[in-house]
Every structure is written in structure tokens, then in C-alpha cells.
Length: 111
Image (cartoon, rainbow, N blue to C red):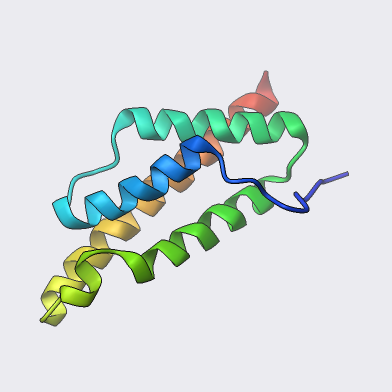
């Protein structure tokens, strides 16, 4: 039976990751390897608790969506090209994070 967290608690790793999203929206860098590894560990722990992967990913994507409105460069973007650069960086980071979460979850299930 799949479990859905009734009241998901933010974790230190997820909170740090969401802060990283804001930072990379400015710098254009990729997510640090340590951040991706933290997300893998977070997903492995969720798998161990019996949380369904789709609920983990839905919570992550909802959190990332809420970050968008608070990103530092979004309100200052004067031109479409600037906004496109911020969005592109954020989408790449969310994709990398989603892969890391999935990898961590799948690894825990194979163990």
C-alpha cells in the first residue's frame, strides 16, 4: 500500500536545495554535486518510510513552483531574454534534482 504523507515536514536537505534554486537563478550555475547527493539520500529515506515516489516528486515540484515567485531575478528581468535565462537555469536544475530524487528512490528499492 502506498503512503502519502499527511503533513510533509520540510527537511534540512530540501530547504537547502530550495535556497540553492534561488542562488543558481542568479549565477546560472548547475546544482552542486553535494546538493544532488542530499536529494538522493532524502529520496532513499522516503522510500524506506514507504512514501510513494509520485508523492515525493509532487511535493518537490510544488515546492520548486512556490520558489519561482520569490526568485531574486524574476521581478528585475527587464527583457524577455533575461527572464528566459532565469527560467532555463531553473528548469535545468529542477530536472537534475528530479533525476537525483528518482535515482535515490530506485536505489533504495533495489537494496
